[in-house]
Amino acid sequence: MNAGPDDRFYQSVPLFARFEGVVDRQNYKPLPDDWCLAIADIVGSTHAILEGRYKAVNMAGASVISAVLNALGEHELPFIFGGDGAMVAIPAGGVETAARALASLRNWVASDLQLDMRVALVPVSDIRAQGLDVRVARFAASSHIAYAMFTGGGASWAEQEMKAGRYRVDVSDAEPRPDLTGLSCRWDPIQAHNGEIVSIIAKPRSAETMDAFRKLVGDIIAVTAEQNREAHPIPASGPELAFSAEGIRSEVSATAPPSRRLRQRLSIMLQIVLTVVLHKLNLPLGSFDARRYKADVAANSDFRKFDDGLMMTVDVDSGHRDRLVQRLEAAERDGVCEFGLHRQDKALLTCFVATALSRDHMHFIDGASGGYALAASQLSEKRAQARKAEGLAQPTEQNI
Image 1 (cartoon, rainbow, N blue to C red):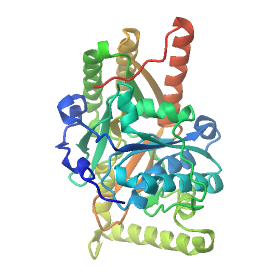
Image 2 (image 1 turned 135 degrees about the vertical axis):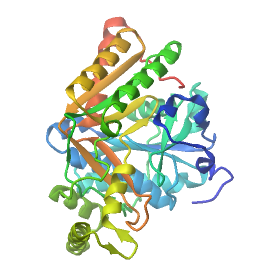
Image 3 (image 1 turned 90 degrees about the horizontal axis):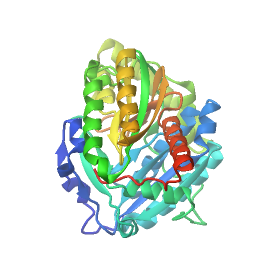
C-alpha cells in the first residue's frame, strides 16, 4: 500500500471503553475525504440461510475483512462485520490493491462457497457530496482489541448504492482466490445460557428524532446490562472446546488451494488436539496459553456495535427479551426508529486470527440461524411496507 499523510488516521482516533459511548458525538472523527469504503455482501443471503448455509454466509462476510486487510498488509483499519457482508475503510493509497482483493474474493466466494457476492468501492468524497458523512469511533472491546463504530449516514448510503449496482469493482484479471490467512470458523455454535440469542438492528428514523434515538440506544444498553456479562453470548472463560466439522472444512477451503487442503486439514486438526490437551492440563506451550487464549476469544468478540444504528447479538432471558421488544416497538410507533430482530438458540463465531501468539485476534459474533441478515431482511420489509402505505421516500440514516 502506498503510504499517504492520512494513513494513520484511525490510530489517531481516541479510544472509549464503555459501550454507552457509541452515542457520544465527541467520540467520532470524520474519515479523510480521499478515503474509500470497501463494501461487500452476499446476494440472496436470506435464501441461503433458510437453506441452512448460515456458516458459509458468515464465512463469506468475515472474508471481506481478512481479504482486504491481508492485501493491504495493515490490520489497523476501521471495519465492521454485518453477518452476510462487511465494510472496510481504505486510505487513498490502498484503493487499487483493495479493488483487486475484492475482485479476487468475489471469484473465490463464487467458486468455493457457491454464493454470489456484490463488491464496491465508494469514495468518501462522493458520500459527502450527498450531504452525508462517515465518522468513525474506536471502542475498546478489551485491552487487546478495538472495533470501529460508524455514524453519519454515509455507510448506509454507500451500501444502498452498491445494491443498486453502482460503484461496482471491475478487475478483469483478478486472482482466483484472495489471501484469507487467519480466517477461521472452528468453534461450534454457542448455546444460549440466559435463554435465547437475539440479533437486533435499530436505525434512526430522521434527524428530528436523533435525541430520542440516542435515548433509545441508552435504554437498550441498560436493559442488556442487567444480564450476566451485559448479555455477552460467550462466557468470560471462553467458548466450550467443541469444534465444527463444517467450519473446519470452510477454513480449509479459505486458506489453502486444492492441492494443499489435506495438509491444511491435518494441520488444523493437530492444532485443535494440542489446544484441547494444553487446556485440560493447564500447560503453556512457549508463549501460547490455551486457557488465556480461550478467555481472549470472549473478551475480543464484537457482540455489539454501531453502524449508522445499533447492532447487537445478545444472550437474554425471556423477561429481558420482552422488555427489549417493547421498548423498540414503542420507539418505532413514535417514529424514533426502525428495527429488525431475529431470535435463535445459539450464537455463531467467526474469527480472524493473524497469530494465536498475539492477543489481538478478532472474533465476530452473529446469531447462528440468520442473525443480522434476517434482522436486516425484516427491517427492509418494514421499510418497503411503510413506503407503499405512506408513499414516502426511503428514510436516510442521520448523524448520531
